[in-house]
Length: 216
Ligand code: SF4
Image (cartoon, rainbow, N blue to C red; front, side, top):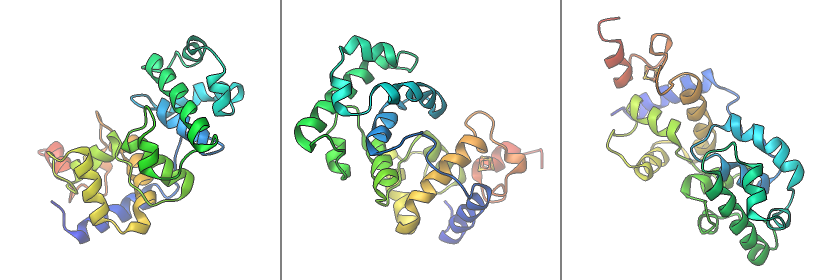
C-alpha cells in the first residue's frame, strides 16, 4: 500500500495529466443529471449522451416521463442496456419526485438512495456534480485505478474503496479527484490495455511493475 506522500504524488501527476476532468454526462440541470446517471449503469457515457440528446428534448420534467405509457419510454431508450428496468425505475422515481419533492431532485445522498434505480454511486455523483457536496463516487474506473496503484487493497469492497479514498484524500478534493480518477481510468489506465509504458506512476504502481516485468 502506498504512503500518504506517495498517494499525494500520484494524485498530483493525475491532476497534471487531466486538469480539466469533469462529468461527461451532458445535462442542463440536476433532474437531467439524475436521469443520465440512472441510464449510465453498465453503459458508457458516450452512448447515454447519444440517447439523452433526443430524450431531453421530449421529456423535460418528471411529469413528462409519467405522462407516457411505459412501453413508449422503453422504446425511447431501447439502445441502452437494461432499458426495460431503467424505464420502469425512471417512471417510478419521477412519481416520487412529483409526490414527495414537488418535482425537484432531493439534495441529500440518503434521500436520493431511496429512489428506485439510485444506488450509492449514483447518489454521490448527483450530490457532488449537481449540488457541490463533497463526495467520491466509486465507479468501475475509480475502483480499478485505486486498486492497481495501491491506494486500496485488491479485496476491498466498493464501499471500502470509497471510505479509504475519503480517509486519504482531503475533503475539499474529493469531487475533483473522483473526476480525475475516472478520466485516468477511462483514457490512460484502461481496463484491458493500461498505458504502463508511458505512465508517470509506474515506479510506484504495483500493477504496472508486474505488467512491465522484463520489459523495463
Ligand atoms: S503503471 Fe499501468 S497499471 Fe499502473 S497506473 Fe500506470 S497505467 Fe495504470
